[in-house]
Image (cartoon, rainbow, N blue to C red; front, side, top):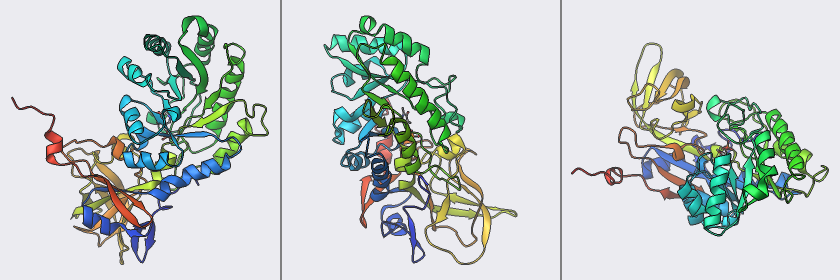
Length: 427
Ligand SMILES: *Cc1c(COP(=O)(O)O)cnc(C)c1O
């Protein structure tokens, strides 16, 4: 398995814990809704990927949009992880967390002139360019600042990742990347048309929550073939290939590929025994694989609303705190923070927001005894949880806690009403 919902959170003496700390204790101490992350859980996927790929010594760049809390970026940076970002705000976060610019990849389909102008001042690993006009702009801005821009072209390999349409990015109808012909044309005119750009790499990212290896296999073959072809066209051969992120995790009973099998597939194409060993540095941009099962969202039950066939559990967490179920109809396991005895009964687990999409799960079998002031954890909430949270319904975004070896600390305080209205003017 890449990971499962309860890999890093264990029931001990009937209580759900993180690295030995009972989550109910954290809920009572810091209030709810509360995101809780385990440091060990964040590092485990990184260490495993590094281990299986030790012969190629890849650069692993965490996709900051999955979870952009500064403390989490810092934990990863201390593990020699770089960052993959999609906005200037994420660049500022990464630098603030102490990540070296040389380990930063700037991705994204719509970088603005102000973003490029600011980013060009740092010796970034690369800009991943996704269109001809963007490339022209990068060339122009670099010239104006008397810099050379290191660029990787994002290749859209037209591979079906067989995931949710909203998180599929490598099909030709998607807005992302450049197709093969566009890339060949760019390469042919590289020196003349883009004098301030060094074409150093190719990148792909075909989608997210990909559960089988086949789409990766197809994409790896295509990027490798294209790289070899480009090396004959470009003034200088490519230095690196960025294989993106996208490896799925377990939310329910899916069987995502293991990190080890994913790594072995990479080695088949680029490892010691491959025909291009040592020719390209290999990069990765994992987000969900790293953070997904490293975090949970803890919530208090406000009410149990009884109905004939199934009850409603109304939580103090809502779609503004964790948007994935509303946005993608995605599944998250929901468990009480302590074991209950007695019968179970079907419930719909919902939030208080005035939208029917504000629902964390329907028809879940949960103990009949769970009621007001009991706590539940929504699992697998470490990626695309807090980073997607909003203030809809004028709700304060949750606090976040990070547990390390039995000690929890708050890494983001809960928002206050004052935080929410600070930018508004009444006259
Ligand atoms: C979102 C994103 C990632 C991370 O995807 P995961 O599925 O979370 O691994 C990587 N690269 C790019 C360019 C992205 O936009």
